[in-house]
Image 1 (cartoon, rainbow, N blue to C red):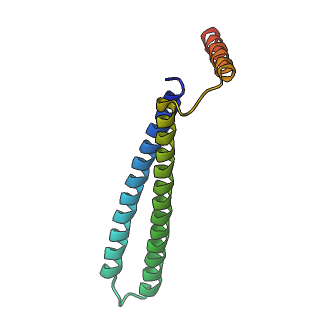
Image 2: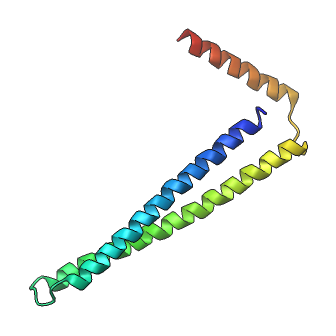
Image 3: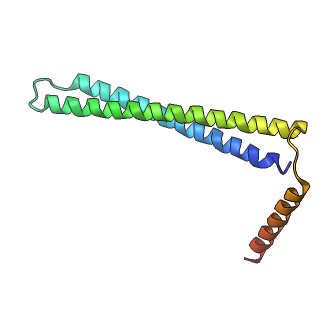
Length: 120
């Protein structure tokens, strides 16, 4: 279980990150709709019409680029989740073997860290 628990924590962290990123994507989608509406609502007879329209189009371009970046991040995080789940499955099925000395060293380090925390 000591080998699986950190992996499960990572999976949860990755899933939380994906949810946060999806909220950002939704916010970008909303901002793009607002900017599109504002472009349509601009008074084309206004002296600054061209500059305002270009500024809003530039903002939409940045939002779309950000959305693409976020989408790529979601794909990477989903790959990382899949990797962690495969790793967990290998541990559960006994495919991944652990060196007993390494495991004992890890346990000793954890005991020392816990002792330091209790003292502090």
